[in-house]
Length: 387
Image 1: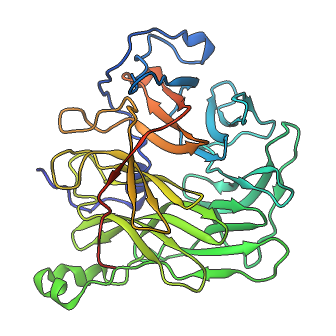
Image 2: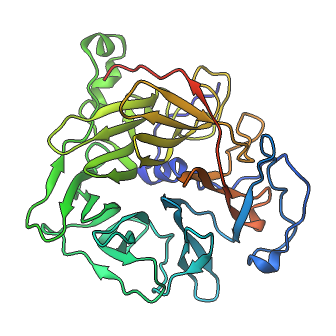
């Protein structure tokens, strides 16, 4: 395997972690042609992926640019690029399956949106508005009730200042990252929870590199990145419990891992990819972690099969037992040495099913937002990694 050095920017790692590379990839499935006029993309689109049994994938929308997706219950949200206004619109799929553009100003970058319940028992979205969205500079948090397209944005008066981004919502509480000026690769962000109306933030002591003496003896270069927090590429919230994906330099390479944590408690490691950043096609990582009930869902974007980590898969980890399960879903992507990077940008639970975003075979044909009404699961071995 051709190993890649970690000597690339944090922004490059984040882009790879979010799966936003535009590369051709083969798909298999039922042959059909979709009308581009209904979606804003041009040309002939790739076939929809076949599913196990009688299940059928449902096309929610085709879009011209890749996007992530957020979900809560039967609701979902993503970004659609509007070429006329050169900005992204916030799109919402409600519990009935209707897709609507929210009537709010567009964004120069895809909305970094998260969904969750509001104190009023409605459904809300939270996202940053930034002076420089690409660099997360000058970011403030906005909240939006999404059950009505006419609802106004609400600026969240989070105390303490700073540039706030990558938020997650649960009733009156928001979890978010705050940029650390000049924190570099080692300590670029801090994580907090804040409850509406409070004058105080609750800090979360993030996971950081802590190699053992034996590991350092075997690999002296680990001293160079000891204590590094790295980059938090995704964040979820349920109650006061957060889940997050971390991509961090580790000696000469990168590592990606998945954690859960509560304020005033130590982070708990759920899974990790020891060769993160050393993959031939970019960082192996965990896309769109989502806590639903007692499960933590994440798409394991591994890229290469047969190298000890297993193939790419949508997995859920029990937060109360030692059970882990893998979804029996054909997402339509193929990831491996002969396929370049996989085109799946996100996968999240949607009720009893799943919603995901998939790039088309040809980059000029854009991407699609797909859903499946139900998912079958099989039990897999739970990873055991020392913290």
